[in-house]
Image (cartoon, rainbow, N blue to C red; front, side, top):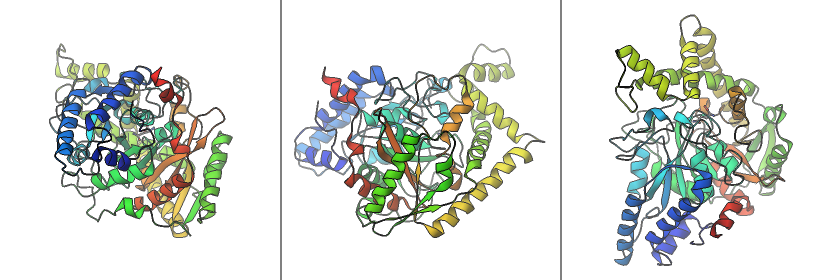
Length: 494
Ligand code: GLN
């Protein structure tokens, strides 16, 4: 095995360029880790060794001809299985798309491929991103590398577990209501939920189109910032992307954080059932920022208790519309022996969708239906406006908000099995952000006594990713939580 656990992308790039190891060795290293670890972790739905090794060979031939490599060239990565990959099965974590092969690449995949990174596989997730633990996947649950009896978080649990166990260097994932930040926190990786409109959603299988964002996970903030250089920006295939300049994140990140004003939302710290160890760890992180020259103050986000309801109502309403396309005719699974068209729709959707998917379609349809629309969907939209107004007010006082990510430590697989609502409540600190469109960066903040990772999130105004990276980068320069690897990696050679 290559000893690259603590290498940044830049360091791997230098090592490739100096021929310390070849790109083929690097890709084989990721594939070997998958071979050894993924029987237990189950982060991948599909691995793509042939195409990965072919690409690695062409990078090696470039190196031998002394052609300079681009910064991401030859770096192995994974992608959550909600991104369309041309010619490669893309399931969205649902049985209804079990055999679906997209005819084109999502823009984010195309951009990353053009930057030279090498796709090694597609990662497991809750179907269409519906969940917080990866247990809702139509295939199998993913396990947390820090304790394989526990969940890695979700819905991008496969991506987080893959990055945490170095099966690939980074992962492309998606956050509609916490799906990047929550698993990042539970698996001790760094993950960015970008400003809505910053990264193209073209080719990302839709969950809630007004909330969906495409982001990245890696072992440290430096890498996340580097990746985003290649994915942020306008895309003519996604009219919600914004045509404003993309900052030099990797340079910006190194600027001083002296005098940055950080707000701690008091309501977050008063939530019932909030684990005391998590709370203490996030407050200790605030002290670290204080020592680094930032100013910490308490702020108020008075409507945050309604965020979870506003989020779920808007998300599932969009689900009921977005998932109408899986009808047994256009994509994926089809119950071909149905006798009538109506039967084809009904049987395809009953067989192909997982319980959580059906639950959301039914609830979303109800929330939008005549007579209930005003009471549910419209109220959720009004709350969304209030939440955005309230966070804008907060950003008049502070530059950044520091908050917990998960209210508890990673829970045991099966713990929420019979109570879907209790699973939805795990999102209390994460999904309120998506209705505001603001970006959030989740980074490791510490560990529990039981050695489980604890994360925190830095939240900023629209298009403030550069500032989030700056704070995250300086925090990681003065702490080493992000470098504490799961024991499973150390025992791999046995
Ligand atoms: N737990 C959230 C949900 O189930 C996560 C959604 C997401 O970000 N994809 O809706």
